[in-house]
Amino acid sequence: MHTFTFSRAADLTKAIAAHAEDPHLAFIAGGTDLIGLMKDHVALPQHVLDINSLPDMSRIEALPDGGLRIGALARMNDVAADVEVRRRFPVITESLLFAASGQIRNMASMGGNIMQRTRCAYFRDEDDLPCNKRRPGSGCAARDGLNRLHAIFGWSDECVATNPSDLAVALAALDANVIVQGPEGQRSITFTQFQRLPGNTPDHDNVISSFQSRYLQGSRDAHRITSRFAIANPTSLHSFRPRRRWQWMVGASSQHAWPWAESRTNLGGLRQLKRHCAECLWTTSMR
Image (cartoon, rainbow, N blue to C red; front, top):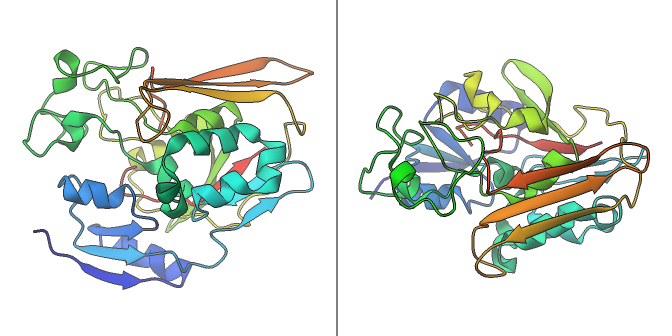
C-alpha cells in the first residue's frame, strides 16, 4: 500500500507555496478522480493537501453583463441546480447531469472535472502495458488494442486516448475562459487553448503542464468577464453512451447558436480535446 501524509489548507497563497516547494504534493477537492488514480498507481503523491477550505473558491456568481464566474471548488450538482446557470447557459447543466451519478456529482468539483485524466484502460492499467501518457516513450497499446472509446480525430502516433469530460465539450462551445494563478502570477486562458492535442508529448494534457509551471490556482476576482452570449440562446448537448448514466461517453456534441453570428458545434469522445497534470485550475468563466 502506498503511504502518504495528509493536511488541510485554509490560505490560497500558502497552498500555492506548499505545492511549489513539494513537487510530490497533490491537491484534493472531491477526490473522485485522484483517489482512482492512486488506486491504479498512476498518481502516488507523498503528501495530499485538502483545499476545500480555501475561501470563495466554491462561489457561483452571475455577472451583470450576462456572464458567469464559477469557482473550481463548486460542486457539480450545485452548479447544475443553480438558477442562473440553468437560465443563462443550460448546456452546462445538461453536460453536468450527463456526467455521473448524483452521489459523485455531490462530491466532484468543477475544476476536477475539467482536469480529470483520460479513462483509457491502458493508462489506468496496473500491469505496465505501454502508455505514452503514463510512461512517456513506452508506446501506445490502444492503437492496436481496445480502442472503441478512443479518438477518431486529433490523435497522433503517440496517443489515441480522449478527454472524458462532457463539461469540457460545453465549455469549449461557449468559448469559456480558465483563470489560473500560481507562483508566477495570474493569467486567463481561453478554454479551447487550455486543452491540447497529444502530438509528441501526450503526457501533457493541457497548456499549463506544457509550461512546466506547477500547481497554478485562480482567484475568484481574477478576471472581469464581458458577456458574449445573450441569455437563453439556443444551446444543447448530446451525449452518446451504452447506458444513460455511470458510463463514459462514446461521443458527445455541443451546439451553440448566436442570432447575430455563426453557430458552433464541438465534439467530445470522438476527438482529442486540447486539454490534468499536476496542476489545479480554479476559476472557469463563461463570457
